[in-house]
Length: 296
Length: 325
Image (cartoon, rainbow over all chains, first blue to last red; front, side, top):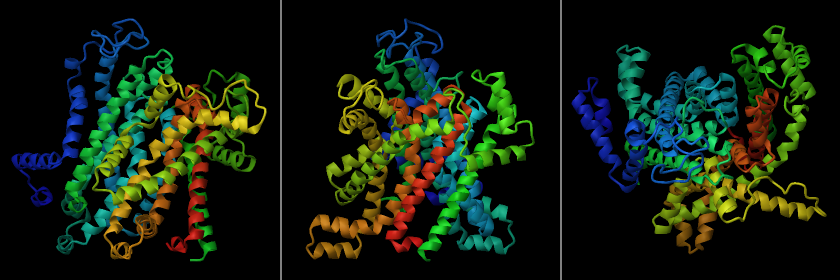
């Protein structure tokens, strides 16, 4: 499977689809992967079609404050009478979007720095690795929160902040992979016929890393979702949008525990856990697909 | 490499990291629209007289490099982190009162997690095919997917609210005078066991899964087979022969895990309303108390760096192989 992805430079759309069906088949080939896909169906459907699932607009009060779960409000209402189930459904989109965007940016930064360090070597390599080590030493959460405070609210900022503090492990992994791919004879051959560094990196090195990149992007989404939830819980989310993390923040802030409105706290946390677990299961399965040595 | 050379190199590099961090905390507030003025003085708690004093004290009407010099000199020579807007007291004093709670929570939890997690990982490696082994691994995997602060809320609802076996907030009973130290300790433990349990549950999967994988890697090696063939007891084989080769990466993990657990502990403190750094952090964000916020970030990072470096140095003293590199 790995070969197919890197073989031709002009991949036909149809062969690409067959390729992805192949990956999907591998992921669902055992219990863990199949469970991962199943868990992920719920939040994905919520994020794609919130209007079809949610009974109300999550911003409009449709009941009395702190109503317990009932037929008209499956998860009850919050302190201003908004329907919690509808909040949950609409929150899926923000939570997933922030997670996916941060993961993509994280992998992009990690890929660029990792390939540069691994391919170029020398002083540049040492510099990039030194920065990576420093980033791994510092406690990320307080620094992310500090940046969030000073950059101001807004999910674009949250995405950038999460990516800024999540790339080091990706860069390390990519650097190690680049070092081994670089030794292949075809890379040497390309260099011998005078291919530029950029061409070698884009045509011969990155395609070899693609399977690993896909796996790590999926795993990064779950990490980013936890980070987003933590920042939102500190009150640093976007007040104009509802994410699962900010729902927990407002629940805690409005005294949901003393009001015994446990469903308000529990529901978004369960959604985050389901999504992160699903992504984790799929991510590790994809890692096995990318690196067959991990299959035992 | 000699131990002294190792120590000098390690400590200089960590001091450099700390200096880098200080520079970051100087730059970040100045990224804000409006620059340094906005962050220091646009606060409802700041009176016009205080504003004048602040501008003078921080040299805010002077060029950036002068501000940077003042910032470093105040911090490093006078240990001056400024005055908290809300507490109206030096930030350093406020932080030093809260720090012991956080340190106690973090160190207790992480030591317990590794004390339980490492043996559990070895056990998981030897029982990786059994039904219980697989279920425990699965459980650890699920725990790792739960947001830490939410697990704290869940524990609070279950143990504090439904079962009533833990208090809902605080690290001690308010307004109580203790006749002796043991009474105080008993009260604190009755409050702290739930936050510690939560944090242990959150950290535990990392040493357990890591140890499991490391031991699985050596389990098929000849020396482990030989040890088994000699008829050594199972626990002896596990601990002396299978775990020892994995001990170095586990110590490295321990050191790095300190950094992440500090962040987790801050959130757990907020959930359980403990009087530590987490609560200060939360309040400083909520009230825009910037000197306090910056002070906490600097202090938390410094403490983390110091803890990590101490663990690494202690291990280098015990195991000379670490000093190479």
